[in-house]
Amino acid sequence: MAISTYAADINLKVKGLESGDGQLIIYLYNDSDAFPTKPEKAYKKYFSEIKDKSSSIVLKDIPAGIYAIAVVHDEDKDSELDTNFLGMPSEDVAASNNAKGSFGPPKFKDAAFKVTEKNIELLIDFSL
Image 1 (cartoon, rainbow, N blue to C red):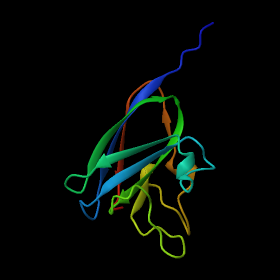
Image 2 (image 1 turned 120 degrees about the vertical axis):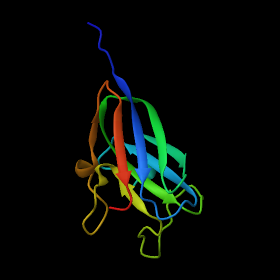
Image 3 (image 1 turned 60 degrees about the vertical axis):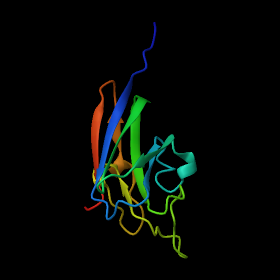
Image 4 (image 1 turned 30 degrees about the vertical axis):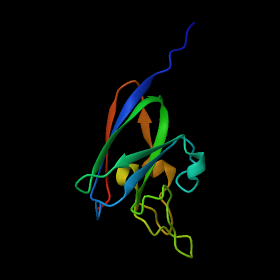
């Protein structure tokens, strides 16, 4: 019996940025232990241009599964998240489902969404 693996596109819209400077770094995670503090273990990494304090990108052919997204507003366009001397982000960050952390980053389960064979629309709002 053949097993079919579904893949879909994620149509991601990001809005509510404080400025139009820099770029967005989008980390797609399928590993709850890595989300969102281990970007080197993200399933995929994308860059997106900012226009009018918002951005749209299509993450193509994502296999079926459970994922979470972390987005960094890379204002200085150095392709990494800048942090202060305590290790706290000094650039704005957000997550899928607009998940927020309590005394730390959001949890995977709060940011998680399911990919099946149907394309999905996601909105991340930095202003929330």
